Image (cartoon, rainbow, N blue to C red; front, side, top):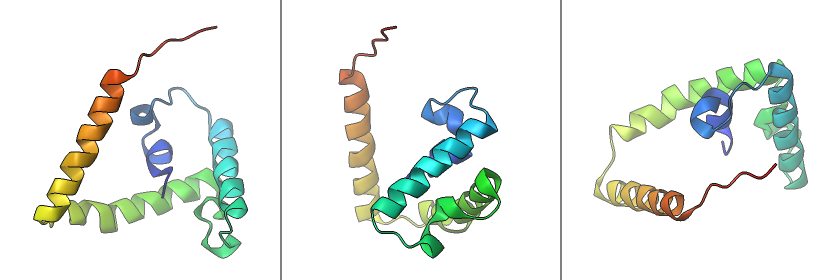
Length: 102
């Protein structure tokens, strides 16, 4: 689930104009990484038959079935956790200097 947002909404993750072939390579990278970490092939989401299209469908289904409903049933502890998470991300982005060298 780590790279779900890059596959479903690449522009929101800073990936602009990537081709399907590039996403296949990205998917292959994550499949290889999961294998190296000991994830069995039958549980490796990036190895779904159907390539990136199947992976996108799977992530969209998980997003709609589990992630979105959970956001509407969040308790106090969950709210505190999400607020802390976003505060850390916000602070990291402010502190980071984006310099591009070619």
